[in-house]
Image 1 (cartoon, rainbow, N blue to C red):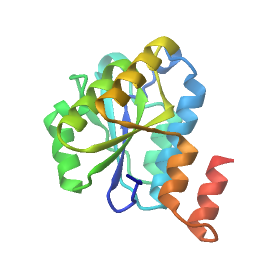
Image 2 (cartoon, rainbow, N blue to C red):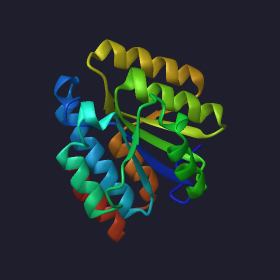
Image 3 (cartoon, rainbow, N blue to C red):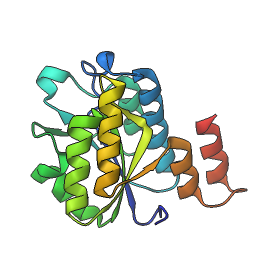
Length: 183
């Protein structure tokens, strides 16, 4: 099924200060998450942000935090459970948006992203993982998690692919803004 802006929501999982230094390809992941937050704002797709155990892992990294502050507002949902969807506050915010397509990014792919995806799929939602905007400490853990989530029924995309899928047509101000973001 094609991503539709009126039915999609971006979910950003745990892109935090003390976690990112040990994440494989961290700089690329942060940049792509930032692009997704800004791009989803351009096309009117809301975004939710989770932070895992902030006392130990710190807040969201500056580039992603700034993207939220400048677009959707910085209102992270702090959690201690691995699955964001397993936390009541997150599940309530997601339900209030009444969207059935979840575009997910963040870290770690094999822990919090995987468990969130599993729970979202179990709830009957459509989940698209932005493969170039997720990672783990090792590439192997990311790869295993991606294979498992695909087997469970999730779909894969990339930052650019997802943003242009949501944009739909060229020649518009949205298209120009998205094109500028991905260059």
